[in-house]
Amino acid sequence: MRKLLNNILFYINFVAGICLLLSYLSTHVSPAKIWIFAFFGLAYPYILLINLFFVVFYMYRRRKKFLFSLIIILLGINHLNAFFPVRINRIFNRNKITQGVNEIKILSFNVRAFNIYEWYSNPSTSKAIVNLIRSENPDVICLQEFLTSPRANYKPENVLSLFSNLPYHFIHYTFSTYFNLM
Image (cartoon, rainbow, N blue to C red):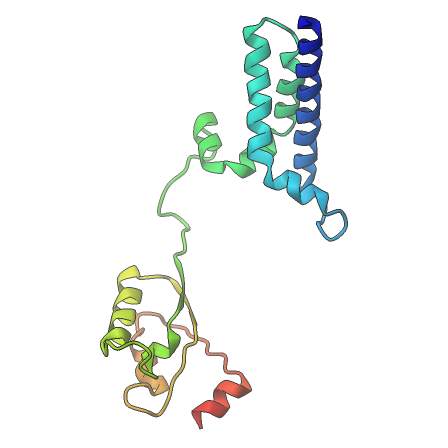
């Protein structure tokens, strides 16, 4: 009975090892060609934990079977580094990580036309949106439903002046947006 249990555990270990190898391949195979690899890629952290369990389990039992999972984990050390880059780099002290260097802060926000149609009962909603964007101080701002209008303070130059700290801007209008402004 004990031998049967040991064989079943090693079979599970073998399947987990193969699954881990397939998860390594998930970054090289397009899901459009073979879709199943994408699922192995998504399950990578769990499959890795299962293999780590078997390494510890067999090491505790002083069996050389731990080498099977350990070798498979070591084969994918670059995959592990890509999945958990900061933690692995700190462990191995590679590429000293310095914060604040070469960082870009990007903000994407649906401003709902700065409440131009007064969807919200609070008239200061547009000011709150602008204050939030200014307080975040992003390097790049991507605004959805950014609408300017000749009405009130929603002229293009007025709205763009709210973000005068950003030297460059690009506004993409579709025909329907342009048509609604006329």
